[in-house]
Length: 409
Image 1 (tube, rainbow, N blue to C red):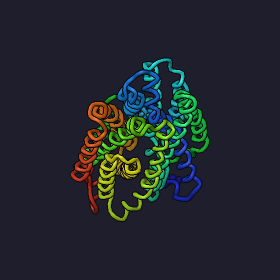
Image 2: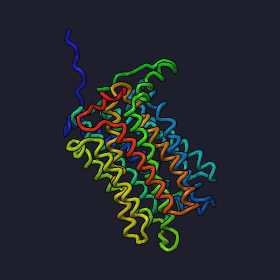
Image 3: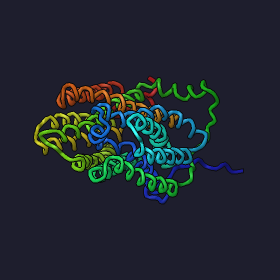
């Protein structure tokens, strides 16, 4: 009796490869358009609901912290039910809660609905890289991961650009509703396009001890811990800039309207480009070098935002965004490649760190901004980015050293 050969994965350019990327692009739109749709509307929410800038930012932070908390439960569920089925359930639930958000009667209910929405959304980024790694050939995995990260930037950009102009005309509630309706269409696209799983092997983990056993190898690996530190520190810095730059530009002397603030998110296109570019650069240099250069670009961008002219602020924002998505693309793809076992859990821990940084740093940076202003906040974020670079330089392997070889050291 012949034994079936293991699944080699969809190759670059094949129909299956294109369907995997298209399905994940739809999931990315549904996820990141909803998750951050309120970010450009925070000044409007602050004014209508009579809350401070830091309190308004909680509408983003509670969603991202709920997402961070739920990525591990979603990863264990997917080990039993499959990646596609679990992601489909997650994105459907998130869209339902997203459609309820505009009806929130007060700030407290708004936070509850945003937390539920974030908890549901935890099933997408937690599983997307694991699904991609299992279904795409190893030779194409890095390029596919970079394409996925680039697609998520477009999803986040779409939600912000759509919500801002609509909110200017009809209020932040209608802006949010429009994004949620678009996310519902993207959800349908994911369910229709995702190809049948062929590389997934069900795992029936029994009990807390067995579940912990799947996490321990990831928590004992110094390189993986370094990648989780990148996620926390860099994402925290990134979301803080986009949370509070709108408050700076809507105040004197700039007085930007919400629709103009939404256009700031066009800087995300720099992230789309850089996330694709770094895949080629990592092959020519090495992943760690590209990661360190990306951190340096982020710090340079932060420094330029200290200037007063709007043109200089925008140049700084573009550089900062390009550097962040370059670093995130390298770190996210490296996490999946470095984990020889428990790949879904390794990716989930990365995402837990990523969204914990978004929540904790994204909120606390607002306290610095309110008390001391933009320059002080940018200085703190530059220190955090520099710390991420130091950790990467100390703990991640360079050229000629295998990440998996160093994993347990």
